[in-house]
Amino acid sequence: MTEKSSQPLSELTTLHVGGAARELLSPGNTVDLVEATLDTWSRREPWFALGGGSNLLVADEGFDGTVIRVLSRGIDQVDAAGGQTILRVLAGEPWDAVVAHAVEHRLSGIEALSGIPGSAGAAPMQNIGAYGQELSEVLVSVDFLDEASGERVTLPASALELGYRTSSLKRGRRGVVLSLDLHLSESELSAPIAYDQLAAALDVPVGERVPLADVRSAVLGLRASKGMVLDPDDPDSVSAGSFFTNPIVAENFARSLPRDAPRWILDPDAPESDVKLSAAWLIERSGISRGFALPGSRAAVSSKHTLALTNRGGATANDIAELARYIHLQVMNRFGILLQPEPQFVGLTL
Image (tube, rainbow, N blue to C red):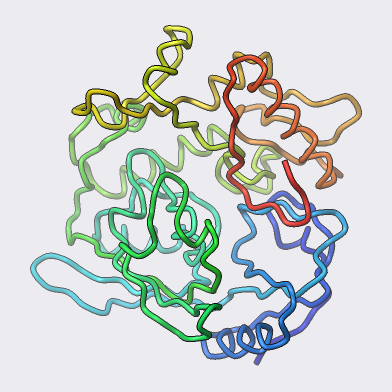
């Protein structure tokens, strides 16, 4: 059964902003999700799918179309051989519940992705990643309802063109993810720790393997210290997480930046490699500090991390967008770098 509602989207997004959709559908299982989606497409009207609402900025005027909430939940082991397991996860399952399940069942490969808000179905769209792990390392395929064909198809990970916080699903391939298959290793130990900050929190060298639960606990602690774990008692968590992605620039451009600018060479073996920069460093060196707010605005930079923009209570979507535009302009003027927003904008532009 599919429920219909005119509930404001501010109640369904982690930024707590956004007006109502013309129609909000809440199918409770995959069969109803497919039926509701195909019916919406047959009417040829604007639509989008809504998961956990953690990567979304919706205009105060709302959305003149249909929003389809993805609520189908379930995690099943569909194959296991040679110390490897395939987990099938329904799209509406909260992502952190997937990680908790994997850790509890001694399955390694996604433990460093603990605490990332949102639903599993949204994870392939931007190839979620944190603390040295990315979804692309374990994703096998997605069960996908394709808008162009109207067919339900299995897309291998290779067809999704997964990159740094992007995929073909984010760049124009329209449809709804119904489930995803993850390839995990049966082990009580984590994958080798690949991120300096996480290694320091665990007090181990980079490359070490430690108990899965230790990694999950350390990552949750690190994320909470940055306001990146949803917590009703933490106003800094009323955000969309990292609002800007770390920019990737040519190596010769990176040489023009101050020597203390953090940078990561993406291909150390290449004569000229692209370089990833720290968006947080660029923002801070552009004169924007933690807690910064424009005069009279209820939107502010997180007091814990300059990459997060927060709703301090009563902010509008326009407040959030104006702050994002200001940061965007400051970084461009100071360094000549255009920061790219990570959340999806609905009815707004940067």
